[in-house]
Length: 163
Image 1 (cartoon, helix red, strand yellow):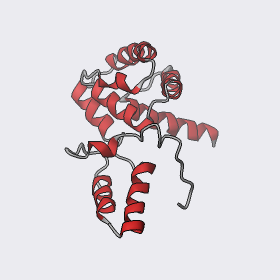
Image 2 (image 1 turned 90 degrees about the vertical axis):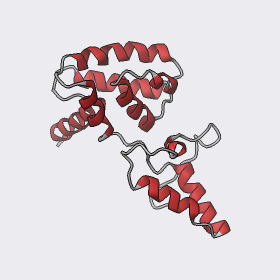
Image 3 (image 1 turned 60 degrees about the horizontal axis):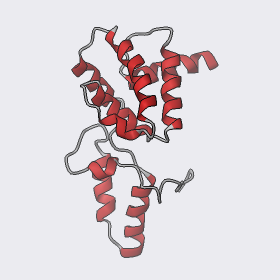
Image 4 (image 1 turned 120 degrees about the vertical axis):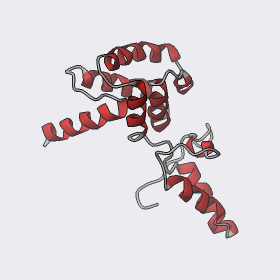
C-alpha cells in the first residue's frame, strides 16, 4: 500500500505544481515546496493558486512568504523544471487552476455564516458562501475576500470533524 499511495500522491502533487511529465527529482521538488510553505507559514491553498498565476509571469506569489528570498531559490528550480516540458504557460496555468481551488470553506468564513444564521437568523452570509463554494475553481469577481486566509486573530481557530 505505501508504494501505491506514494505513486498517487506524487501524481496529484505534480498536477498541483503544473507538471505534466515525470522526473526522478519531482519528489524532492514537492518536499521542498511543502517545507517552504511551512517555514513561511504560507497559506497552502492561496500559495498553490498564486503559483498558477506565476506560470503566466505574475510575481504576486511572493506576498505569501515571510521570507521571499527563500521562495526565489525554490522558484528557480521550479522554473527550470517546467521549462523542460512542451506545454505553454497558458496550458500549465489552466491545468493548475483546475486542480488548485481558489475558494475553500475556510473556518473563519464558515463560523461567520453559522453565527449570522444562529444568532441573527440571517442566512445571507451562508447563501453567499455556498454560492462561491459551488464553483471553487472559477475566479469570481467580487469574491476575493472568500479566498483570503484569516487575519492573525483567526489564524489559530480550528474546527474538528463533525463541527
